[in-house]
Amino acid sequence: MKWVYIEDLSKHVSQEIEIRGWVYNKRSSGKIRFLVIRDGTGYVQGTIYSEKKDHPLFQKYDRLTQESSLHLKGKVKKDRRAPGGFEISVSDIKIIQISEDFPITPKKHGVSFLMKNRHLWLRSRKQNAILQIRTELIKAIRDFFDNNGFRLMDTPILTPSACEGTTTLFETEYFDQNAYLSQSGQLYNEATAMAFGKVYCFGPTFRAEKSKTRRHLIEFWMVEPEIAFAQLDDIKKISEDLILYIIERVLENRKTELEILERDIKPLEQVKKPFPRITYEKTIEKLNNKGRSMKFGEDFGAPEETLISEIFKQPVCITHFPAKIKAFYMQPDDKRPDLVLGLDVLASEGYGEIIGGGQRIHDPELLQTKIAEHNLPQEAYEWYLDLRKYGSVPHSGFGLGVERTLAWLCNTKHIRETIPFPRLLYKIYP
RNA sequence: UCCUCGGUAGCUCAAUGGCAGAGCGGGUGGCUGUUAACCACUAGGUUGGGGGUUCGAAUCCCUCCCGAGGAGCCA
Image 1 (cartoon, rainbow, N blue to C red):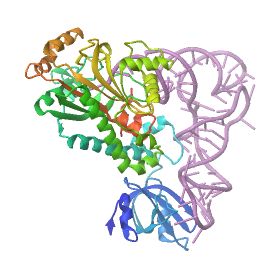
Image 2: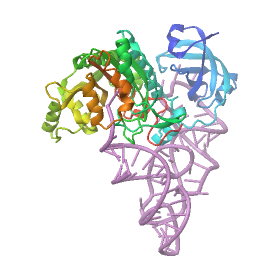
Image 3: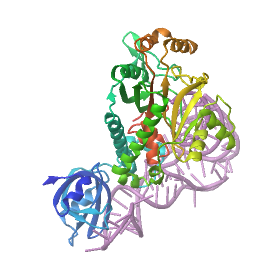
Image 4: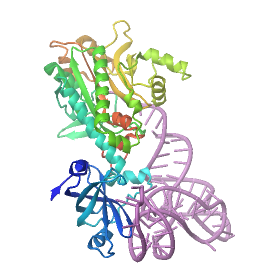
């Protein structure tokens, strides 16, 4: 008999097939018994009907507990009463294992309990939906870059020193020296961009910040394109195209999951390019007009980002930040040397920054000065300075945070649900 | 690191100085279309740890531990 995944059931109506999965829920009513099975690709209801109370299938059914594993054979039927529109009229059950009492019952649970049971929580419907969308999001990101001439260049996770010297890094041993877990692939990406033109890296990054908010993970995934000869305006356009492509793909292929999450898709459908483009100084002005007093030189916090997204109702592209609040490698504006050509994109609906990037300094002397001003050890940056000695060109890039983007797409309150096993402040179990 | 709130049955919570409870989950029985099914019965407790006040503490005080929300920090 043919083993079929639940997501493909619609192709097998009226056929005898086999499903392999786990018991999600049971309901019984004497002579008819219901069994909801999940197999990772979806959920389907099985029905067993008999006049005889001691029917062998009833005996097996009665032994089944939540999350018991089984093979289930039966005929696929279309039925309006069944969740999902299809159900299986069960002809045989092969029990693989009777599960012990499963901790996560179909009722309410607290976050702390669920996080301790993250390895089991992943089996729940909403968690499953979020992570199904995650795989679509990642595929969409890769397709976007692959289809637009970018070369995938993986950057190292073990690095000899800080990329920027701003964030706190995880330190580890590297034989007889110290090494640090990467907080960004960008600097290495600049080298590969000079070798391949258009590149991107996609990998995990690590920040040892003691951040305890719904927007922060200690370990998170970031995609970082870097383009030789590109200037600020070029990456504005690419970041818009990327975001629009991602939304399109998720809306096209993951509608069922968005429904499970009860995500109102209108705000996503309404995202259009070009996004509102505004400078840092204009943003400060707007915030002040809205009663949020801010001075030039202050960085936006979570409340400001929320307010900005309320003003525009679209993702917003903010540029021209004070040099003081940005990293050392940012290219200064010709007309305003106190400003840098940085780019942040804030997602709509209050989700805050999902993209950060900008144009990089290509002048060797200027870069050297900035490294000195930021008290960074020049020896560590010799290779990086080399990139400006041998055919230096203007170049730009940005990083997009996968989990923040996913939280926005799914309308998930907390970022911890957007990665299978989140690493959070002081929490690394399971 | 700081601020606020919390920790009672496997889970979610009630009991605010006087008998430690309910719903879910588990077990037993019933029911022909259930949708987190329902109905009946049943088992289940070191009230986070330690100390104190009191005739009496889940409840008040001290202390430690753990968690949540937020802030700061943070491309």
